[in-house]
Image (cartoon, rainbow, N blue to C red):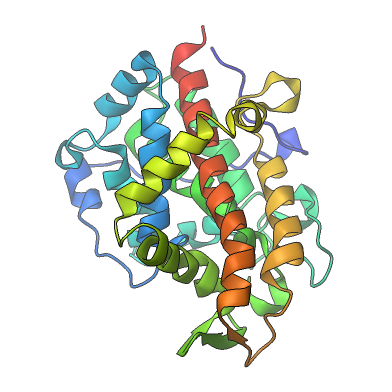
Length: 300
């Protein structure tokens, strides 16, 4: 059995409620929301790259868990966790998509920050990644592994979006209203979707598959050494979401928040200096998701 997820407080690993699936397809067809962390493009990029990096054993195991209507495609389920978080029976899952950190602190501490709005410990993105990694690495009769896979694939992506580990006071940039070129939006949405959409349209002819291929090529060439480090956790653990969270909040302070005051107009200068950060976070999320799944299903 592979070693499990790493946390600063191992006794505080979150055990999220797991609902019994009467039919997987019923859950899979939940209504889509108007906005998703990283946007639908970002989540599809991450899951498609991760799938390409799976070992044969891990790929077969993942395909066996996917709902029938996913057609064997991991990216088909990567938005599921967003689509159900406002449904009755799944509202509890909304806090699992982010981590609130103290205003201006620019750091992350599990015990202090991994909680929901009613101070339930462990109820945040890092706690959930610990939880679902552990579920997938234990007796399959104890847990709903299809649901665990669908949560894990989404939340590993979320925690790599810098503003998903943003400041509590502005809700990770959601209340920082500004303009993206001529469009009224908020800072969080700029990082979730607007920058990726612009990159897709300007640099890749509107084709998200070209962006996916470009990032995958970098992972296997110019970022090859970096990618090996991205997939490694101290102590030999298979997931280290606290590390991912610390990276995100530092990037939020270094890149997302500067120049993005309320009412600001963000345009070329912001886009050109921030899109490399967003691209690398997509790549890191993909490498780490693949590494987690490979470790669960490949290590003995």
